[in-house]
Image (cartoon, rainbow, N blue to C red; front, side, top):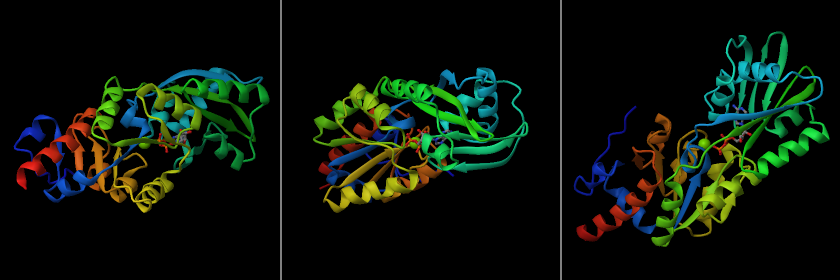
Length: 289
Ligand code: ADP
Ligand code: MG
């Protein structure tokens, strides 16, 4: 569904690719002092690609990608798309389950497969060997996202997925600071990868390894500390947090549900639009009063 967007800022908003839902949005925009940014798809492009595979002893790398890809094929997550795209002729999957913020599971080629964060595999009683676990930590410290795949009672290896920071994100963060706003990076991804991405764009506050349903609680906690919170996200797992924030901004590249849950849609998918939106609203309000 397209939001019934009202353009304010005398057409300037539209020019900048900013759709504001109503005049009441301006009031909250003025008071915002904290901007929570979702990592994947907001600060980063969200267009992930498979960058490498490390298997446990005796496991064929192509087989790891094929079986993980079979299950991921049923998921919309950027990680899933990267893994599914790395293999052709994926076997059909049955008994698919998406464990939100953790990973996926399903049956393919007669194997019961799980792909996701290490804790999801731990729920199945599966653990990586020390060697592969070390390789996983190394890749994460480089800012990469690593998911673990297992089937038939054992962890079989890791898939390293790399995302890229949008070229305009660092400039956007500088713009937020110039407006006196405090940026915070929020993500379900691991802490090492999150800190690396944060450092790359100039954010020093990071809240990582947050499950989708807990993103709302993070926003609420900041609000209970007296902060007025803007949240920028793409709606993949963060729509409730967008709705909870004082000012929800949805990346235009995001999902319909994000646009539904937000006050402002940033059509261009460029984080600088968030800065423009706040600056524009402050100015517009200045001229109304
Ligand atoms: P973000 O907060 O960066 O948008 P998510 O909450 O969507 O991240 O996901 C958090 C973590 O859960 C991912 O980094 C990944 O480890 C795991 N995960 C989620 N969905 C999947 C999936 N479809 N396949 C594999 N891992 C997944
Ligand atoms: Mg996300």
